[in-house]
Length: 322
Ligand SMILES: [Zn+2]
Image (cartoon, rainbow, N blue to C red; front, side, top):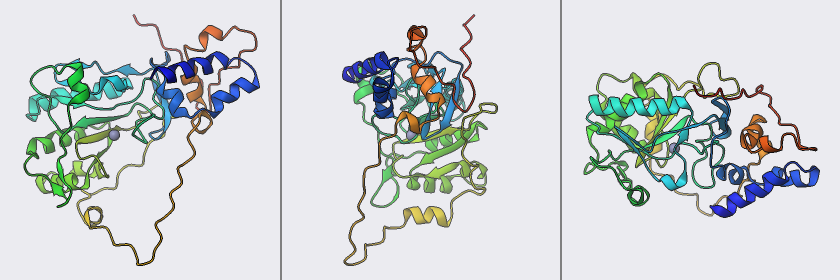
């Protein structure tokens, strides 16, 4: 979106000016600032903040083509993640093809080059540890860039009957989700409640992996994998471990129960749109991430504001590649 890039360029150009101009940076919704970043922050890789309120330093791109995967919707520029996430996807893709009869992954949204809130879709996917994987297997040819934009994902769910659609669901889908859940780096996998129900039915005696697979609305044409914060990344806010047990009982049934009809005469709740998240709402180190590289050119300019390292500690520079 060129207009957004122009806006960011203007904001960055004025960020070294005193108070008034800096206010523009403070007041601009963070999704516009982070949505305009086209390149990763040249800092050591790190996830900062929580999955739904944070950013990422030192991102790497998942190559758009691999032996067992293809990245989709390339125009969104969301095939970025921590090196950990890219490594996870490449391993899952290869293992799924060799062991589960899943020919390859179609990879949907990961994160923006510097993570952060997005202009469209997704509350999470902000710190480079989340990825959406289509429940449609990779075809046996390279898709064109246009096909990667246009190809429709297939819903696996018969919403009316609140179950998977037997005309599209196959056990190979259970196997690839199980494969992802068995990776010790994975914290959660989100799937539609109807899909979780199907996984519960197909799992047999081997059920421990089901605890990581959580029901959530949507997620009917893809599954969402979330990795844990790696040890040692201070400032990365993990989720609690999932409840033990397979999660196939009463709680899952409550997701699948028909909605209760509203009480007669009850007014629909008033939903106010939330105030947009700004830089001040994100961890302080996300300011460094946003301005890294962009700010260097002005670092010696008189009046340039100090680059804040944030409560989580200074951000180390990326080591030069050998
Ligand atoms: Zn997702």
